[in-house]
Image 1 (cartoon, rainbow, N blue to C red):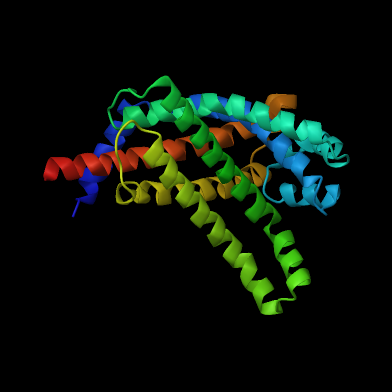
Image 2: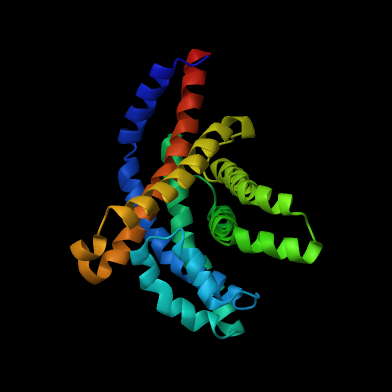
Length: 274
């Protein structure tokens, strides 16, 4: 059994020595660079689904701070009102290209967490980077579709399959647990692939659970704080929405890196105690 105080002390020391806050700031920039083309792809895809533009904006507004919603509302309306297959393919390719920078940043950060150097070949590193990109896209898709559009999906299933009212009531709770479960699985996949060391599922699941739960709590808590207590528009003017979004990405990136640090710290303590 690992002593809790020893674990927390070692984790904090490694957290600061590995400059996790600085790396999270770097990740937030790369996330921002890649997320807008990805969201353009996701929103363009929504134009092919039987969802009205007003309903999509209403559902996004339930979970995204008001400043950020105002920032993208005009573009969302422009994209959703017309089906554009050429925009769909272009946005996906551009999202993959820009997101590769973020995946390399994750690989470097997790290599630092395990105190290893990147020794994989250029081709193998590229393959890993693409797999990490796809994993992060799954996270963003699940985070967008289930919490934001989960109610609409439940109603669609209810109408098409003819499920009971009890299912609809249970679905409002189940969709959050499904979202959390999928994100945990993707984070475990990221923590195994990204660092240049051999890891097993039992060595990464704790950090993945903490990171996924932190991701959800930070998203909900930060959105509530911005909507009710903070006035970023008055402080930053027209770029208030960008600042809000960058702060959220910064906290999300920090949780992702914290999960890797938790896993590496546990491995270090186990190895030193054996």
